[in-house]
Amino acid sequence: MPRSFPLPSPVAVGTLLAVGAALLACGAVPVGPELLGGLGSLVVTTTFTWVLAARTGGRPIVFSVLALGMGAAVLLLDRSWLDTGAAVLTCTQAAVLAVMTTVPAPRFVEAARECALAMVTAGLGAVAAVGWQPVVSQVRVEYAVLVLALVGAFLLVYRLGAGLHGLGRRGLVAVAAGAVVLVVTVAYAELLRRYGPDGLVEQLREVADDSRDHLGAFPRPLQAVLGVPALAWGCHMRARRRQGWWVSAFGVAATAPVATLLMDPAVGLGEAALSALYGLAIGLMLGYVVIRVDLALTGSRGRRARRAEEERALRPEPARTSPLF
Image (cartoon, rainbow, N blue to C red):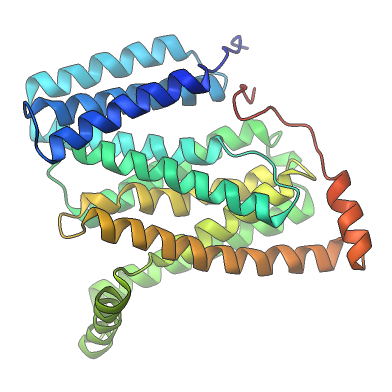
């Protein structure tokens, strides 16, 4: 089993991400050489690689050097397919990292905080992905990032959740329900896009356009219906039992759409931020209902009993700045 490496200090990570964000801002304005945006993406992606590898018990030095070398090659060769591949991997990495850096949340307020931090991480990944200047098909990229992020998250959770035998009955039911919601949501959206009646599709577009006109953005359904509720419930459950990691893995259904928001050239930074915020708000409301139903079915009765249960909900798990393995 590989030896765990400590995560870089929060100051170092924050400094590197601030430098990367500044370079990305210079590239977007633009100010200075055109290469600055790509360098910002390279800094953010390499930093994410180090943190994700260290957090999940990998070899951060090896993978960081590899990411740095591959990113530099992408910038030097300047091929559209390489730029697109780098952007997809950046989005995928940000989506998985956003979930892996969460910690258990005994109370709903703390679960909401974890979801918000995950959205911020995925949002920074979205900005970094644009810095690669990819040439993409929006729908294909969204599906590719979602699939890759789901596979990556569940491979990691397989170890964190002690394998399939660590699921238990409740974990199995939660994972099965999450899988059904995921498949139904994605399949329905795709079938509607391809074969839906023109009148219905036009009505849905009008609803989205009205939301953009009056609210500034339209929330991503997968983020609001599945991703955020699953991440909130998963963090809440992890404070009590490790099966919560299996539920948390569905959080990439929220972080992946956020990470790909800016890949659509028709979506500006302000609209993307509002869309993520609306999806977070709706998802937290649904997550609150799910958590309350879970506590009502399995938790203690009465307000005092619930408060006492929250105080005891301290299942040990490494801190945010420590390796999980």
